[in-house]
Image (cartoon, rainbow, N blue to C red; front, side, top):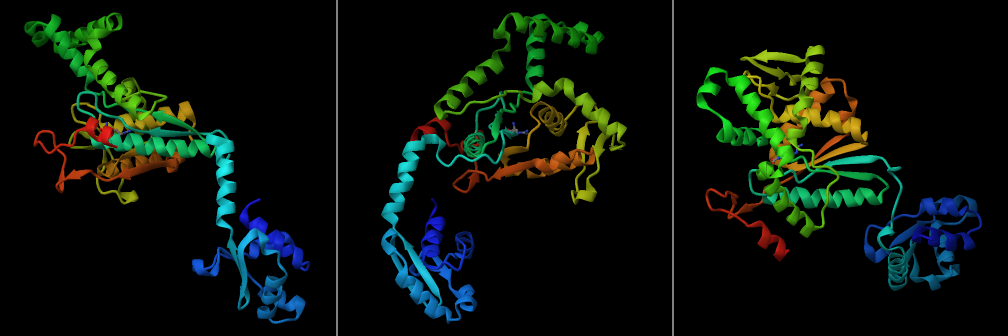
Length: 367
Ligand code: ARG
């Protein structure tokens, strides 16, 4: 029984004129703690009992069995209830101990998925305090929604876009020839790229950069007790961006601006258009995020998609949602950017180059 039920049941015993449920709905939380934890206003009984509310309150307070409470007292037209804190604490703690991690579980989510875009470090760079914040904030949110009956899908949207180029450089160093590349650049680079990828499949050490970073990151994740359901990073969407560009083209949403392809978002109050393709055909961060959003909706049919990313990327996520909305996907309303602020040191942004750093490992150890 919760405390409101308990109080309503006790009042109902001495006020047969009202239903217990009715009484429960009338209970109020007093403005000050010195007026008790919950109060029952006697006004509604004045008509039925044809007495002044003050007198009714005094009557009820006298008749009520106060043994379940610390104190019950009438103050004017109110009956104030002071809960027995030690008894309630004992009840709650007893439940917590009995139910363990399932204490206070709810089933609001009916098993639906909530996608968390979290952590997402860049593999060629050190893991930053910002990535750490994204990791722990998102993991805490994921734990909370799991208790509410949703299924969290923890996605590490790794910044591995540069990986292709890294591999191309390795291939060029291994087998490339300057004359051949100069004579037939696209074809020659493509061949090198295909060859290095084939080799990487046989011999994972070719993929060294990505692998080393991941080993390093995983050590950290283990220490934090965080695990992921997907490590599909930016490179995963390499072959999924054409579709995005096709849909945008079909819907007539792409406009040319200085040779680049953009989506105008003025009607959403967003001043800067979303840059989808550069004049040299290169895709951008947002193009990959668009492909990722489509992929996640299809794969997980998420009830919500939550992006836990620093607030310096707020404009990016506003654009992302708006472009999807323009594409006709109403589920973009289910996407939320959970932003957090920058950690500074001596009032300045952290910078490895400038030596203004807080090292991650000692920070975690200290925490
Ligand atoms: N890798 C990015 C960074 O370090 C964060 C990615 C956030 N997630 C996303 N879907 N854009 O800044």
